[in-house]
Amino acid sequence: MADATGLRVETRLAVLGRPTGPGQPLNVPIVPASNFRAAPGGTAGREYSRDDGTPGWEALEELVGDLEGGSAVCFSSGMAAIAAVLELLPVGARVVVPRDSYTGLRALLADGAAAGGRWAVTTVDVTDAGALAAVADADLVWLETPSNPLLDVVDVAAVAAAAGALVAVDNTFATPLLQNPLALGADFAVHSATKFIGGHSDLLLGVVVCRRPEDRARLVRRREVAGATPGALEAFLALRGARTLAVRLRQAQESAGELARRLAAHPAVGRVRYPGLPGDPHAALAARQMRGPGAVLAFEVADAATADAVCAGVRVIASATSVGGVESTIERRAKLPGQEHVPAGLVRLSVGCEHVEDLWADLAAALDAGA
Ligand SMILES: *Cc1c(COP(=O)(O)O)cnc(C)c1O
Image (cartoon, rainbow, N blue to C red; front, top):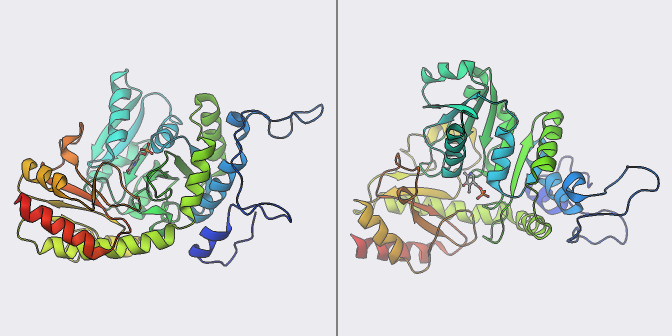
C-alpha cells in the first residue's frame, strides 16, 4: 500500500490502490479467478475469492476506506451494501429511516416487514429535534444526505449525538470527497459506487465503510455467506472511475450550481432543490457539513405531464434513471413505486461533465416546449 500520509484527496485518488513493487503493473490487473492455489499444508492465503477477496476488491477498498477514514468492504451493488448493513441487525430490530430516501431501501424494508417483521421500521423527520426523541430507543438510524430525490440534508453529527443507536449514512450523493459520515460520528458510510465513484454508468458496485474493524469483519462474513460479491471487471472499472472523481465532481458541481440558479429564475419552474442554492432550506447546514453541494438537483414544474414533457424534450441530457455519470441524466421520480411522497412534477437532474451552456440550452428548450 502506498503511503498517503499528508497527501491531499486528489492525490490520494491517483496513488492509492496500486501495486508498489518494482516490475509491478501500475494498475491491479483484472483477475478473473474464483480459486487460487492453496498454500502448502495450510489454510493461509487466498483460496476462494468469495471468502478471501480478490486483488481488485482490495485495491478499491483501500482507496474508498482511506477517503472515508474507515475500513471498507465492497459488494455487488449499492443495494447489496445496504442490505448487508441491515442484515447485521437481529430480527425485529428497530430501524429509523428518514421521510425521503432511495427507493430501493424503502422496498427492501417493506419486503422485510411483509416477510414478518424482519425489521421494525419507523419513518421520522430526522430534521426535527422533537422527532429525534423517537431515535433514542432505535437499534439503527439510517440517514441519507443529501437524499434521493428530494435533496434533504440531515445533520449527521446531531443525529449521531442524540441517537443511542448505530448510525448508517448513505453517502452516495455527497461522495467521500464532499462529506465523511464517520468523521461526523456515524458508524457506517454506504456508497452506491455505481454512481459518482464509478462515474461512467457502466457498472454496479457498492461499498460500506466501517468505523470499527470488527464491523468490517462481520460484513466480510456477510458477503461470504450471502455471496453478494463484486465482479472482477466491475471492481476494476470502479477503481478506474474513482481516479477521476475529483475532476469530474468539480466540473459537474460547478455546472449544477449554475443550472440551479438559472432554473430558479425560469418562469416554468417552481421550487428548485439544491443545497448549494442560497435560499434552499438546507443551504446553511450543507455549507457547514459538506465541502460542496454536489452535482444532483431537483426542480418542480406544473404537473406530471409537464415534467414528462421536459424529460422527453431534452436532446443532450439523457432521459434516463440513475445519477453520477459523466453524462447528465434527467428523470421524473414520482413515476416510480414507493415515491408517493415526491411531488408529481418533480424532475431530478444529475449533472455530468458536458459544457454548462449546452446543458442550459437543452433544458431551456425542453422547458419552453413543455410549458
Ligand atoms: C442508486 C442508489 C442506491 C442503490 O445502488 P445500486 O448500486 O443501484 O444498488 C442506493 N442509494 C442511493 C442514494 C442511490 O442513489
